[in-house]
Amino acid sequence: MTAPRTLYDKIWDDHVVDRSEDGTCLLYIDRHLVHEVTSPQAFEGLRMSGRKVRAPEKTIAVPDHNVPTTAGRDKHIDNEESRIQVEALDKNANDFGINYYPVNDIRQGIVHIVGPEQGWTLPGMTVVCGDSHTATHGAFGALAHGIGTSEVEHVLATQTLIQKKSKNMKVEITGKLRPGVTAKDITLSVIGATGTAGGTGYVIEYCGEAIRDLSMEGRMTVCNMAIEGGARAGLIAPDEKTFEYVKGRPHAPKGAAWEAALAYWKTLYTDEGAHFDKVVTIKGEDIAPVVTWGTSPEDVLPITGSVPAPEDFTGGKVEAARRSLDYMGLTPGMKLTDIKIDAVFIGSCTNGRIEDLRAAAAILKGKKIAPGVRGMVVPGSGLVRAQAEEEGLAQIFIDAGFEWRLAGCSMCLAMNPDQLAPGERCASTSNRNFEGRQGFKGRTHLMSPAMAAAAAVTGHLTDVREMMTETV
Ligand SMILES: CC(C)[C@H](C(=O)O)[C@@H](O)C(=O)O
Ligand code: SF4
Image (tube, rainbow, N blue to C red; front, side, top):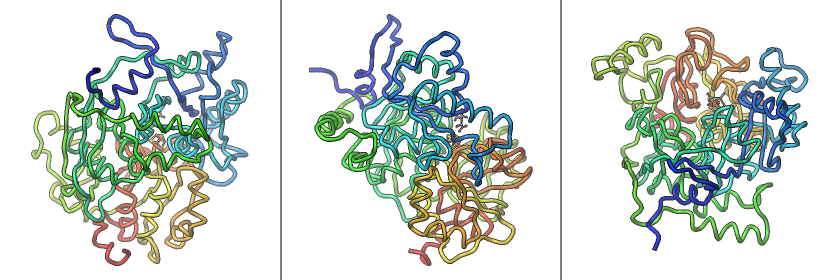
């Protein structure tokens, strides 16, 4: 009898190619996703040493971070640095013969949205990318995490990665969520409870009824922010919803291969009695719609709360809170719902999928964005964009006064022209609220798509539940 294993243990064991005495392993990599920011030097390294990409059929590239989200971007990109990175990816994809979705391809989009959408991401796989939010793919029961540029080169050349195993952590969300509470509220609330270092050294398995009840897109939102919680990766055991989502996608197995894959995928769960080194349990019914008030993703509170004071914290957090509040221009004690906003960003690999756009559009239908507030909707991929147009969501956004953009990372990190002006405050569906993340001196409040839409309508942070009776 083998000892009971966690889902992470199983995927790990199935991918070990070699093991050294100190436990460091060489892992086989099933999928290597590539974007334009962290890959140019890696390809250059291959070129200089005369090596090829070992498994071009398992390597998938797409430009996303630097691409403008306005028409004409396939002809010209104004920013010199961005243009160089995107052109380098074009050339590298072509020279090395890897799968590629260029800017003018409808399948182009944020790498973490494109991978699952095209069926590249499958249960039980190891998935890496030179990008921290690779954790997103863990929603399929894959071991998925970010790697550095030198590791990108290593994976390109060998289809393997040198890794030390992390510890196992379980995050269980029990019971049902209350109305107006979404996957984004779960993932932010977990970080609020554990802190940004709570997951350091661990791979998190999210489980419990509230996680099971989520759609695949919701599960991607949860896993996406495992990295903000400090974890190496986050994953969720695959189930019927996972198989249903994957089935028929362009790169999913077909016919007999599908049956064989399915039989394997059904073994991918944590065995009864398997050991977790750390366990966190949160009741689903205790989770409220939340927003961040500070410059760390752990600075999160229910929307019904007030801006905290530095004295509410202890140790190093006192000074951190003081600095956060100063940067964010907030006074302790003020109600969160009194915080006025200048901009709304709906998009990113956290919340740029079709269900996110549906949730925002449901709030915005027949309403207008508040005077003086600018809003931008950036679909996560060209296919999400097309779907939203077909469903009439795009028209709802446009009628409400939002800009309807082309796919990319956009104002999630402001590497392209989509940026906040200094001092501007944004209700954002993205995953990071660091100083200047959305533009120099820009201020970010993270929240769900429905909450961002509600804020757009009122012009200040808003409890979406107050608007729901009108829409549901
Ligand atoms: C540019 C890239 C390396 C970066 C990451 O790794 O996460 C980006 O995607 C981000 O979200 O900050
Ligand atoms: S959408 Fe944001 S978080 Fe996701 S990959 Fe792009 S920049 Fe990183």
